[in-house]
Image (cartoon, rainbow over all chains, first blue to last red; front, side, top):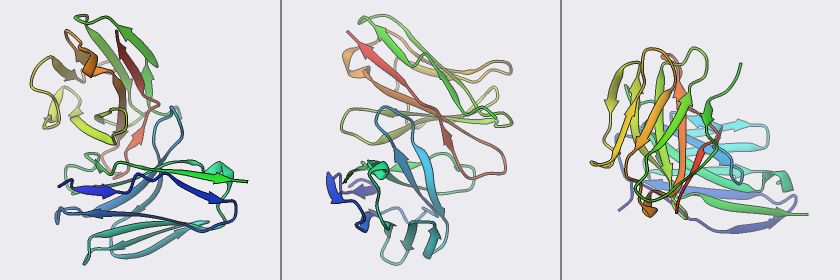
Length: 113
Length: 113
């Protein structure tokens, strides 16, 4: 079983739709949870970063963590064609391993006009 | 402030040759992480280095792969006697002592022919 599971999609939605991206994780040592966005042939860029269970909002993006069920979500409101990318969830155990991330497989999102 | 710089962006090697991938972390960052992204797979952690020290190499293949982060100059990921299965995108990330965020470079795409 992979430590972080993510539905690879692909996911195709019309412009303006609400997008829900989800991951589950199995390692109870994971403390930090991130969402990265990766455009084609580019490096991943950090979108959202959370530590505790609950919601964190940044503009059109909301990250949600439920540690009791080991479930991570990213919601995108009013999706735009420029949101078309691969979205990667990631987790780490913190401490001396801040940058040692375990990634999901990534979900390919296409937002069409 | 320049981001994480990786070079070359594209590298073609024949089977049996050596590949050297370079990574210059963001200014002020002393922690470097290397990841590999195989086609249709997510990012996989390879190695974590600080200046002149390998901290965690649990994701490195046991043979042919090595990494260093000298006191002066970029971090180097070296792959000896490359095989076709080494063809992938290799990403470097860096973080500072105080941050928990890891910032990624644009990657080096290695093609073994």
